[in-house]
Amino acid sequence: MTRLIVAVMLLAACVPTATSSQASPAAPASPSASLAPGTCEYIGARFTLAPGFTAKQSFEPNEPLARITVDGDLPGRHHVLLDIVPRAIASYRGGSSLTAVSTDYFARLRSGVGAKWTDVRETQYRGPQRTYPGLTAVEPFSTAGIPGQYDHTILLLVPDPLPGYGYFYSFFWTDIHLAADPRAAVTELEKLVDGVVLLGSPVGATARGCA
Image 1 (cartoon, helix red, strand yellow):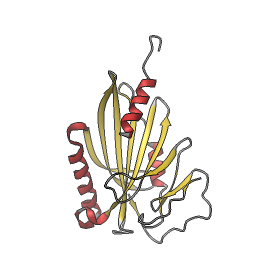
Image 2: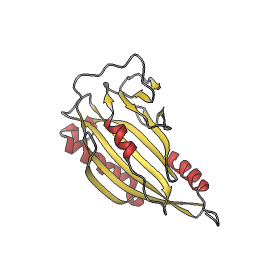
Image 3: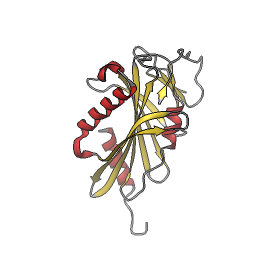
């Protein structure tokens, strides 16, 4: 629903005129006494936002843990939403291996969206610091007769070795834009995910917010 509302607002503002990896759990990192500017701590993880982006914690119906939604704009009429969602490793094929967990997660995701997504591709996404199980997809939509597009990129940050703290993180990035415009680069997604520090289990984790 959030993505649809943002899409309506984006397309309304863009109507043309006639002139127009895997993370190693290692030892738990200690929460800092004070957060550096642009740094956030939620759901057992610390991460850094791009300038101009915001983050908030929310709870979805039937979800046992909170999720974080990162919200911001990129140049060229692009609005980005990034949901960071912790998932229990044992719920996906018993957490038997990294491949089993990611394969099961993406299979459930694809089953849930059905034919709404096109050009769906699973891959190993090579970021600057880590390699992640990933999935990309395109979701066309139209608002007030104006064709738009969601470009989805989902990366999984899975502890290696398993089970780590017992949870992995799904980073669900959606680039919302006019269908006529090219998709935006995922540079900010790369930076955020590569910079994540796992502090411990998301269960009972303190939400310190963002500085």
